Length: 118
Image 1 (tube, rainbow, N blue to C red):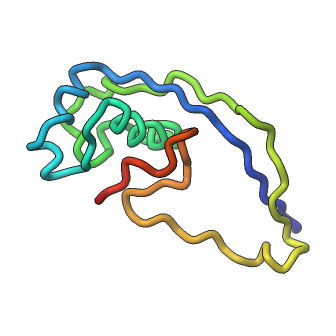
Image 2: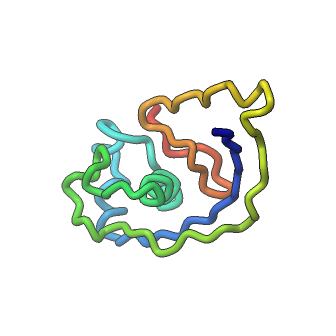
């Protein structure tokens, strides 16, 4: 069966409680988990995870936080899907490179891949 690969751009909107930000934006927390210095850094880290359906308490460094301390508000398509590859072309036989632990292929618009493990 033939397959085609498409790319669409999504915008992810999340809410984060101040108590979670206060807990993770500390030197002690950064020493053991991720190097996040601003609320935007925390949002960059959490948005792709929440968009992929991961529970907050399943993420490294966030297990002690209440589940509702960060939540997905909306996911909106900001550009329509476009064909990037199909099985009839030789390049489609390449498999995508798996992400390293702590990274995601979901990207928050304008943010690149911030929030990775150092």
